[in-house]
Length: 97
Image 1 (tube, one colour):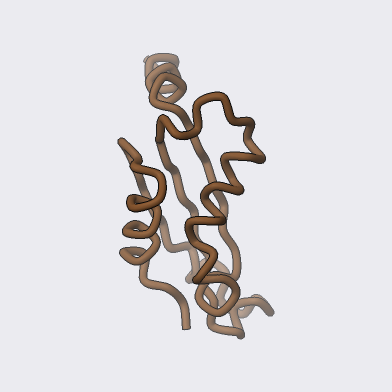
Image 2: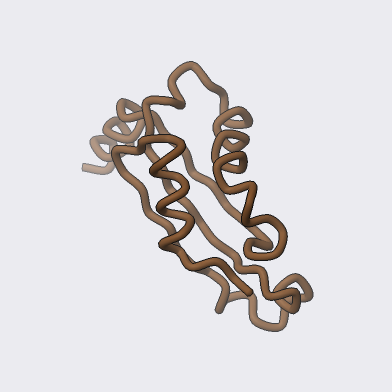
């Protein structure tokens, strides 16, 4: 059975104290995919946390995966992660003006 996005949200908030967090359930986009047969969901997480400061992308993803470890593989089959520090996130927004 796939995880409820609220569960991902709560675990990430507890572990990484994000200032901005969006959890998107993309499971419907993968209907019929072999991995979807196991019941695990497909999710995309965009997360902004100062705990990512000084960490490269791989380390940031590990931090997110560690926070959600209890949900793999039964409730999460696939997870896409976009992780920023607050400064990176603000810079990204201002570059879109």
